[in-house]
Amino acid sequence: MVPSRHTSSNTAVSAPAWGTRAEWYFSEPARKPFVDMLPNAIYPQPLANFDAAQHASAQSPGHYNDPDMLIAGLSGFSDAQNRTHLSLWAISGAPLIAGNKPSSMTAATRAALTNREMIAIDQDALGRQGTKVAEDASGLQVYSKVLSGTGRRAVVLLNRTGSAATITARWSSLGLSGSATVRDVWAGAVFAAILFTIGKFLLGWYLGRGSTTSLYGAAGSLVVLLIWVYYSAQIFFFGAELTQVYANQRGNRIRPDEHAEARTN
Image 1 (spheres, rainbow, N blue to C red):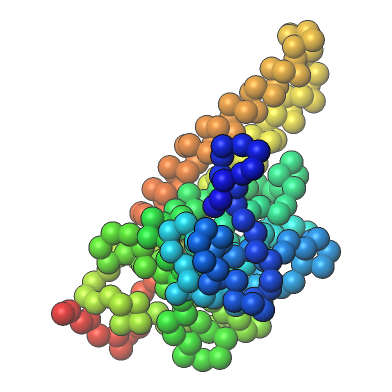
Image 2: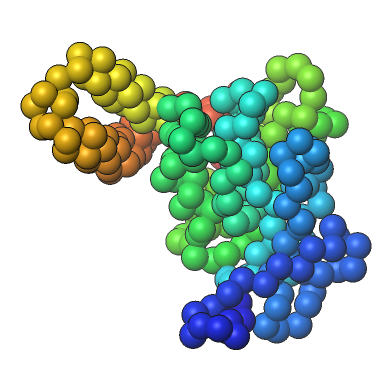
């Protein structure tokens, strides 16, 4: 961050070099590596960008490796691919810059982009970049990020192959020992998606009745807009809380292998 010539505020510095000149080691104050943002039509594969931005030793609070803007929500990507994309950016602590069109995103995309725990992992106070800690078989990878607090880790199990597979994350690989509580932070995101879908349907049904203008006259459109803003705000607060409670209580558990051994220091 450097002072702007025209205002007293700070301005982020972009240093696009596609990793060819080790821009992640620039001296202060311009040490925040960015990759050029390309048009969506020629956007490179997210996995390639993710791999190119693996420079954990150069990352610290205020200085982040950026594998480029997000493409979650663009045409052709499934909900599972969107969640994988966001998981990789979050484990990296990368800037989350949405690249989709907000006005036409699906409820599932909105729920993924606003998942509170995903964002918290990305913006953890330690500012560290997650790294690959295991790859038992080619393409079956485990990434771990140390989070603030005692014994807290964010973990991504990444399957780069073209078929379903089992991936094992060992406590020793994560720098942990003994027992631990594990949950899937995406488990409750479906609730927020459902709530947004219901709100969209109800608003469309209400507008279809044509009663807004007769009730409120010229202010009818403004009333509808305020209703939607209010409802959306409630989803962001209530939906996020519900998502976290569900993830804590009923999130998909990662169970230890039958041959796993509990170890304590």
